[in-house]
Amino acid sequence: MLAIVHGLWRSGAQEATLAMLTLLRKRGVDLNVLISQAADRAILSEIEDIGISVFETPHKTIANYPDLMVETYAELIRSSDIVWITDVEYLVAPRIKRIKKEIPVVAHLHSYAVACPIWSAFYGMREVCMKNCSSSLRRFAKCKQLATQYRASSHQRSTRMKVYQLLNFPKSWLDFVTWPMNETIVENIDGFVAVSSYTRDLVRVHLPQLKHVPVEVIHNPIMVSEPHTSSKSNQDGSDETILYASGTWINKGPHIALYAFKKLLDESSKDVRLVMLGTEDNAWIKDLVRRLGLESHVKLLPRLPSRSLVFEMMASSTVVLLPSLWPEPFATVPIEANLLGTPAVVSNRGGLPDTIVDKVTGLIAEPSVEAVAKTLEEAMRTDWNRELIARTAKERFDPGRTVDRLTRFLESFTNRSLSRERT
Image (tube, rainbow, N blue to C red):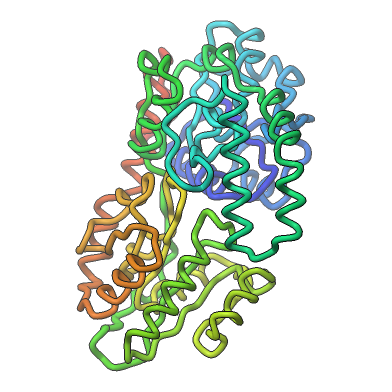
């Protein structure tokens, strides 16, 4: 099998790809990786450490889509049984087929990038987009304009946002006409792996031709290095901590977290603090904390240097919060928290509701200030069974079953087993 990995930026999709490559290698799958010469050296090193042969090739970027020069390794493609596009490298599909017409090409759907020019399928940051904008410049421009307006109202940077609004239409026109996805690219992909049922269904709304293309739902593998699972009880009278670990991207709702936390403090007598990872150097978040008068209750931390430190914080927190506004295709944060015995409060958007079992491993809320504050208050007073949370998450998200399902799906396109041995 040949895996196409751009490796250009660190993201949840890249982390999931690294985890899946590790699992596939352990299963004895005969793997090669074709990666960009400009890839993050840490990602490249991690793939090599797995014991996989890596081949570097030049790439160009077209409207944010990485387009790897697969022709550099035409013989590698000809000697492979299947090509796996691991993220958004969709543009290579037609050229792979020109090199070897009969080779199956299977692509991962970690986002809506195959169907949406801005990859989020979130119309103006107001509602899930259920209409195809690829043939409507007006709709696309309006989407970007509304999103700019929302950011302006949230960031309180009116001057800068007014400049963005002035540039919105010409920039929208440029983005629209340069969007490289077309029917030819999709037609040269034989099957898709969607990270959630929601992702599959939403992409099919935008691309009805996929109705006749195999689309398998396989969750990303979640592997947690386990510190001691916290036995913290919400009834023991100790300080309670809400952990927000999803960064500063506005679609993730860090401002919703802060406003909801402020409301929770104002209406509760509990001694609660909010810890926000990856936010220490963000001027917008720091300013919002100051304006809300939360300096003594909110701790802004940098991105932690290791996942084990993040897991330790998750395990010792009372609840982990992910109030995403956009329809998350999938999210690892609440599952990682659950695997460590910590309940999660998530929004009801996208694939997020599928990451938890409501009232067993966490709670689901509409991503509004009032709803999130109310749900957080409920989560704080609930006496969670942390052993049950961890056990339930392990049963639902078993990495072994995940890699088995992916292997079987990939093998369904070939006449050969991809594994040298089963372990």
